[in-house]
Amino acid sequence: MGQIKAFIFDNAGVVGIPTTNISLHELADRIGLDYDHVKGAYFGLSDRSWAGEITEDRFWNEFAKKIGIKYGRELKKEMYARHLYHTGRKGQNKKVVAVVKALKQKGYTVALLTNALPFHSKVDVKLGHYSHFDKVFVSYKLGMRKPQARIFRHCLKALKLKPGECIFIDDNLVNVNGARQVGIKSIHFKNAGQLERQLRPYLR
Image (cartoon, rainbow, N blue to C red; front, side, top):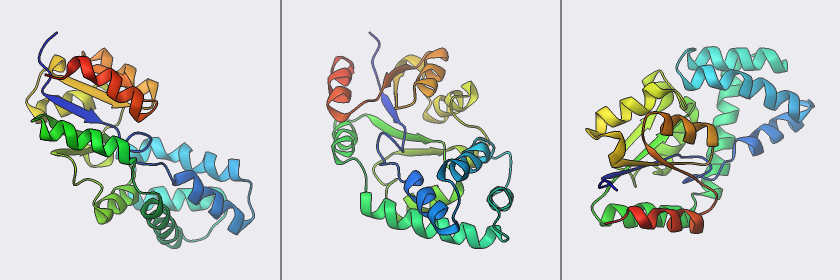
């Protein structure tokens, strides 16, 4: 087994506690629409925004149009406020953050690779959620997203490492398989205990 030098973590669902669906539920209740319709409209546009294929303003304007709200700008402000509140209240997965800190103390590079909309990233920066990591890769800034092979190759190049020198951790099996296809050893995250057990064979 080659020497592992870096660990690349997903954010929401691994380090972060997902809160987007809570905000979407509240929005649906406020405007009197079916939650599944609001959720479908939001995530139907997310892939393009994650990859930087549409601007932030266009995302909100198209989302607003799909759910019958006139002004995307006001919707953006509302969703930012909701996400800030819920993410601040929920915080991060403390057990996973402890794993991240322990790896860093052992001398490993720890990175974050996240598919995120701009407002998600702004909230995480404001709350200091990126501070545990040596490197942070945010999809919309890079113009690519998981599970595209090129985003994993970008991370490897930025970290100056070979695929066999990294471990990638994500709760989405599609993303895990995407990393494996470029040669990165990967762990399909379920919980902190399972993560710790699966990490042990790789630690020096």
